[in-house]
Structure formats: C-alpha cells, structure tokens
Length: 270
Length: 309
Ligand SMILES: Nc1ncnc2c1ncn2[C@@H]1O[C@H](COP(=O)(O)OP(=O)(O)OP(=O)(O)O)[C@@H](O)[C@H]1O
Ligand SMILES: [Mg+2]
Picture (cartoon, rainbow over the protein chains, first blue to last red):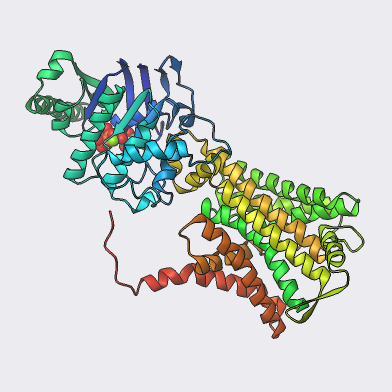
C-alpha cells in the first residue's frame, strides 16, 4: 500500500524560477490497485511519481510504502520496493550492455551486489522463456547490446526488468509517449498483462483518454500540484472518454476564469 | 635486444596503468588526472618500504592500496562534495605531489641495493637457466632480463584476466552500468555514488601498482615520474581500441595491454632514431589529440546515417 499525506514540493524556492510543483497531495492507494494519473502539462504528474521514487526529498509530508516510512530513504534504497519505467526509452536500460546483462542487473534490484557471476545459469533459462513470450524475436539475441534495439523493444524489456522481481509499486510515467502507435499499443497491452498477472500496485501517467478509460480501476486527475478529481469503483467503470474531456474543459475554463480575475484585480489595484 | 626487452617490460608494466585509465576513462567516462599522482604514490610507498627492508610483494601491494585510497578520495570529492570530476582529480593530484615528497622524504629514492620483485625475477632467471645468458632464436639474451619479461607478461595477463572477471560479477556489472546509465542503475537499487568511488579506487589501484613495479624495475622512485602519465594511458587505450575494437570488454582489455606495449616500442624506436626525449610528452599529447578529433573529423565526409530510433 502507498500512502501520501500532505506532500509539498517547491523547486527553486525564493527565486524568480520558483515552481510550486506539489501543493499538498493526500493519496492512499490500496494494494493491487491500478491507478491512472491524468492532468495537463505541468500539473505535477511526473513530480508526484519522482517524489514517490525518491528522485528528490519532499519539503513537507510523509510517504509510506509497504509498511515502511520511506520519506527519508534515498532513491536507491526505495528501489527495493519500486519498479520504474521512464518516458524516454533510453533512460531505462544500459545501452552498451547486453540484454542478458541488463536483466542480470534487474534481477538484483534491492539485493546486495557481490562478487558472484552476474550471468548465472539460474537466470538465463527463465529469461529466455520470458523474452520469447514477447514474440519480438529477441530470445536469440540476448548477447546483443540493448542499445541496438528499437524504442518499443527497449520499453518492453524495461517493463519486464522493472517487474522481474515483483515490486510493491510500479511507476509508469508516459512510458509509451515516445513510441509509434503500433509499438505503444504493444507495450500498453504488455503492461496490462503484467499488472493483472502479478496483481501489481501501479501508478501510470498518460495523456491518452482511451487508455485512461480502458485500463485500471481508478483515475486521479492532477491540477496545479493537487489531486483535483478522484474517480473509482462503478463510476470509473462507466466512464467514457467524452466524460474525461468534459472534466478537462472544466479545468481549462476555470484556468481562464482565474486569469481574467487576476487581470481584473490587476487593473483595479495596480 | 636488451633495448627491445626493456621496452617490452616497461610496456607491460605500464599496461597496468593503461588498464586503470581504461576503467576511469571508458567505463566511467571520466578522464581522471589523479593518475599522474597515484602512479608516483605507488612508486614512493613501495620504494620507501623496500629501502626499509620490507618484503617486495608486500611493498608492492601497499603501493597499490595507497593508489586505491587516492582514487577513493577523488571519488568522494566528486560524488559527496559535488565537485566537477576533472577538478576533483586535479585537486588530488596536486595534493599528492606533497604527499609523495613526504612519503619519500626527498624527491628521489634509489633502489640499487634493495631486494625488489625485479631482483627476485632476475635470480629466478639465472637459477632456471643455470647461467647469465640464454639464447632465444639464436640471440644471446640475459637470462635475468628474459625471466623478468616472462614474469611481467604473466602478471599482466593475470591482472587483465582478473579485471575482466571482476567486470562480469554482480558488482562489476553494476559499476559498468553506473558509467553507462546512472539513472537506470539507481532505479535498480545500486548506490551510484559508492560505485563511482569504488571504480576510481580500482582504477588508481591499478595505476599505483604500475608505479610500484616500475620503480622496482627502473631502480628508483622519483617525484616527477607521474607527469603526463594519464595521457600516456589514454594513448594506450586508444591504440588498443584501434587494434581490437570495442565490441566486447575482453577485447578492449587485451587491446589496451597490446596498445601499451606497442606504444612503448614505438617510442623506444623513435628515441633510438634520435627523437629528442624532451619532445616525448608533446608528441604523446598530439597523438591523443589526433586520435580524439580524427574520427569526428572523418565522419563529416561520410554520408550521414539516418537516425536508428
Ligand atoms: N527538477 C525540476 N526543477 C525545476 N522545476 C521543475 C523540475 N521538475 C519539474 N519542474 C516543474 O514543476 C512543474 C510540474 O512539472 P511535472 O513534470 O511534474 O509536470 P507533468 O504533469 O508531468 O507535465 P507533462 O504532462 O508535461 O509531463 C512544471 O512547472 C515543471 O516545470
Ligand atoms: Mg511528465
């Protein structure tokens, strides 16, 4: 289970570049829940995921994950509990190392790394079988550098790496945004399969309304560093893409209203 | 012949330095100038211990450990204090200059009387051959020199194999990934800072090992002996890459050792033909410059490949 309470994060505080990226996020996610995170550009979706993963420490609030208070844990320590796939296909793999070596690294996530051989025979057999299920013809290329693969192939492998050891939480930040539509569909389908099979607690950021309505059991919509809507249960099941677009329109109208109100106040008082 | 054997032995000893530079420069993409100070540190520690009568193997190991410590300091400056990697190396190299003078107590320690690993090798050679000279392919060769060359070859091969093996362990692959993609390996739970510190310690340990052995072979340690050595190491790595390519780590390691030996041979020949020794560092630097710039320069004349991703 993931529990966030009162999370705040301000970048570059006290400067002209100050950004209040998270302004008090409270969120509890039950084990096995698959949550879609929506929101406009700059609403704080990536910042939320990075805060959970520990890319930086939050200014205020606490983060609990799987019965640990991880608020003060450094990123590499939290990685014991968290699997991640990034937006950029280059981010999730070590390009000059082979497919097998990349998985060897993933198979030690959260464990001490000693002087045992990285490529153990225990790893190779299940690895070949698992990669064969992708039907990408990669099972015969385990010794090839992972940098020689396409973006879609890399994202599929990164997803398998992130979930090779079952994580307490899976973080997916627009992990198909950089892919062509066909590869994106493939990776989305694979993600859904893995998440259902292992019953993974998941936070997935996307801009696709289609994905948002067809995947997951809960949607949160971020706006200006806060959770604006939280849609779950029967309501989530009934939801159509048009309903979501309506909510986005509403957000946009409110934004304009805010701006015109600010302009009026400016005129009146300055 | 003696000249040739001497060049081969020094080339082999310095290939340990080149392997150290391979780790910092190619695996961590950090040209680490700590090298210039740590080779001298290795030589100083070994020399002063040898003069005191310490066992040569222990003295050599102590020199290597000293270098590893220096590398760790550079790593700590870079990762914990967020100092630019090049500047961290410069700071440690500069500090090491004083440290080395303190270790030696003066700027030069001769080892003529001391028992060294080199004198072990010489005795072994004479004992095995039963005389001062042996014949290799009809050439008369000092059996002492032949034995030292053989031991140097054996030791370098073992060191290269050990490095290769290390980089295939769980820790070693995590270190390679640290240089390749720190974001990825952090997300897989490795401590990137610690890996960089360990990697620079390993690199400078190899460098200082080369220093300790070089001092024993040439018969002295000198405060100036490290100047320009990182560039020497880079040159060896680059020649090695031209010889064996970079397709696999094993090939790169073999290439680096070959590159160091070949470079030393070329230098010996050039000096024999009347190259002014004062120009050596200039030529080495120009060589590395050309090797770094030429590939990019040549690419401009090739048709641009379309992006792969
Ligand atoms: N490391 C950082 N330093 C400074 N500002 C940052 C940093 N990371 C994010 N921000 C700012 O915080 C705000 C929220 O950014 P975030 O990346 O979380 O948005 P997002 O919802 O993921 O948007 P998108 O849909 O474009 O990915 C933005 O204004 C962004 O510029
Ligand atoms: Mg984002």
